[in-house]
Length: 364
Image (cartoon, rainbow, N blue to C red; front, side, top):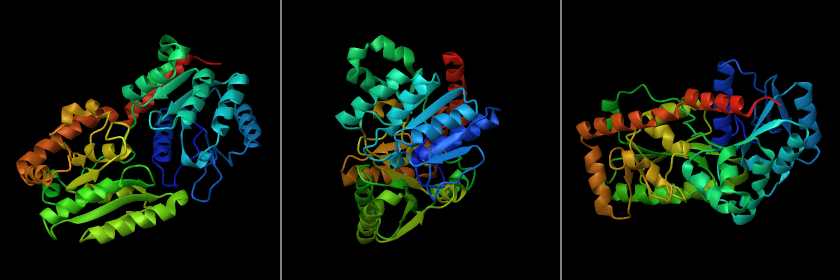
């Protein structure tokens, strides 16, 4: 599996890749990882670390040959490939020309600019299969590359959802979380995610219930975006009465802080969807979420108003949501709905879908 980001570097895609690797290995699949030479990324005996220069092409193909690799999965995009780098596309072409069976997982498509989207056409040409994380992302691909032929793209494409990178909470009890006075945000802090809107919603809650809640920001800071995080932290601390930051901790520690939350406030530049791992981290544990609606949100209609709530910018609406969740009976009902809905995002299921894809595309 090729992915520029990997633990301990804070990265949603890196964490997803690590969870996938762990589940595949648990199913007796021998998995090697090709990732970045970076001081925050840990390596094991089955890891090759490169710098993503053009010279890395030779190291990658040589490693694959020496270890008799049969299938290669590229996880794309990831920040450490480089903001404008086309090396992942060159890797895909080089590996395909050498006869390897390639699966590319595209985590982001519709949100990218037109040049980045066009560059992704390389993956559809070079790959035996392309994994999209939602049906809406597939439709965006079909619209973009209609000249390639919709039938041809559909034949190559598989829809495999992402999962929560954190294990679901088993404690404290739901009844305890119903009484919690902690409201949380979770994610890797970098620009263009729309996270600032979460602070604004938290400010409205703070004004509705002065001094009642502590606003906890959980996640990681990316080395590329430290200045952005510093400004975000300043905005939160100046706008909210009580804040708490839990940063760059192991997953088990992050999960503990999530599990003591009453609810989450999570906003995204394109609205909530099932490809948002931070959102899944809360709902898989039955923790309600206040979020914003977007073009991909209709896939969540099952839980709208039943654990997932849209903030429309009106404080009166927000007050009704908060009062509903202050009722233990409503809170417990919401938690059960969320857990039932999110069972489909289990990583064991995701790994089975990848193994099925490997079987479908066959050996080289």
